[in-house]
Length: 191
Length: 149
Image (cartoon, rainbow over all chains, first blue to last red; front, side, top):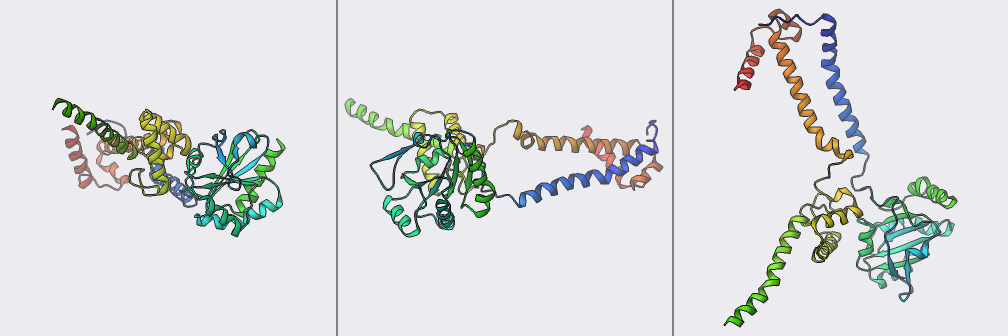
């Protein structure tokens, strides 16, 4: 059939080794990807707003409806924006942590009452405790959309220049606070 | 009569425009992902956020924004994940071209194997575990034939 010389024995050995090692390597890579995938939460979509200026807002205060809060009012300090609602079940889970945090007086937390009736929000804070420096009312959820909110609760870390540095999707946890958020807050406060 | 027709025509105009807008929004929303129920489009989802975003998209469209503007508006807030069709850029090269690379690799390997088998002398087929002139070489010949067609 052919006049080509047979492959040299050495090359044949390499091919022999490749025959089982190559598929095994491919398999190992696939397993590695799937394994890492087991521990990732598909609901946590990375926000494009990280390291970008916080969207501009001007919202009335929950407790003083005739006053407004804007981004400019928070310039010069590191602060947390916590998106919550009285209808939000997992907000109850993180709420004690926020209360503790407010007692520790490390960083001001502004509450964004997301798509909530002001009277419901006020009642909820009255019965669960109010950890917020102040809450602002996003009745129609527009500011929420600007912040890319899709799963209440969410918490944003915003630096002195008004730039979003971190976003926690879902309830705060002791772990997230101690290992990520508070170290970041301290670092931002120093800078 | 003419006045009546004109009046009818004028009355129908906004409705026609609305239909066109509805059709446009429907196809646009079918390409956008609802962040709350991630495997549903914005058009299908009944999540409150999806309803808000549909309103937002409608208002943007009515204010004269193009489909691309609207997509950019949502991507700026929620990331590329809102698009069912991810954009082609360096981080998505693997996603877009990986399957083709794999297909090409497979083809190359397959052709190499075919060539090697075809070119080997019968006794050298032994290391491959393929006795000469049996199934495998017949198959190779057949594959050749089919490929040459």
